[in-house]
Image (cartoon, rainbow, N blue to C red):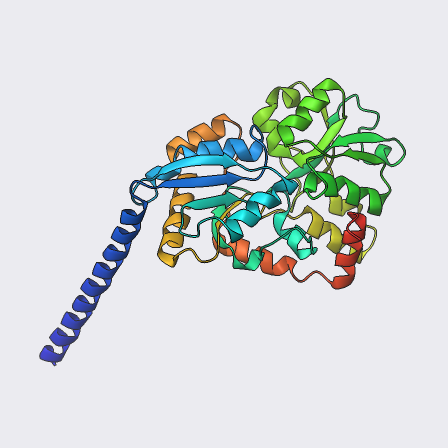
Length: 343
């Protein structure tokens, strides 16, 4: 009996040694690959906005957590609301683990709705994680012609947007369609920074974008009470806007409630991904590096200093979110497409 127990224990120890050795070899292979390489974080919007600023902060810290400590840079490729860069990462750029991209502006939902310019399947991404759930809002100057959604049903408000394929455009257009608001949406701005400049110039009254953009880029506007928030889009009311209603609170029936919940959901809007085809060991290493960076004290000090709130979303949560939004009914999808001017 003692001999059998000794033999079994020895076998388990040997198996553990073999397993640990294989794990070590895999880690070494990843480190060997990344050593001396350059990892590029692609941003599908213009420099100076929320995603650009986050990518710059991330690039200064994530290399410490990637095996081999590669150089990390940021590259901007704006156009089609981020779709040009996203398609490139998914289809044409190297799929070796040296290219990352942060999704933005309802990218996954645009695919679910059948946007023809999309050349990727969200269910096939290698999700690394997200830095927070998006809280979007439609915000105007506090002296704009309308400062509530109800007032916007009778008074025209000019809203700046990136382009017609981006949520900064489709969100106010969809609200117009379902609730009868009179947003005049002006596309063509390269990013949130350009829309805010247009607000200062008097070209537009406001912007339907991410609330965190105001906190990180124009916190003084918030502090001075220069902005009015008409409606917010998230899973629940933000602590920063406790008195601003969610879009779903304006739903008049069950179908509108489901549609508005789809529109306002944004769990993937701050997600980092790598393309299908990247070797699994590198995906695992990048996923760990990304999540470890989000907990890194030096990273958090810089991110919090620029008003970024870090509340990590896991890769598993993102996968479940994508599967869930693919359950929207065809009839509801058709209505949203019509609201956005697709059909």
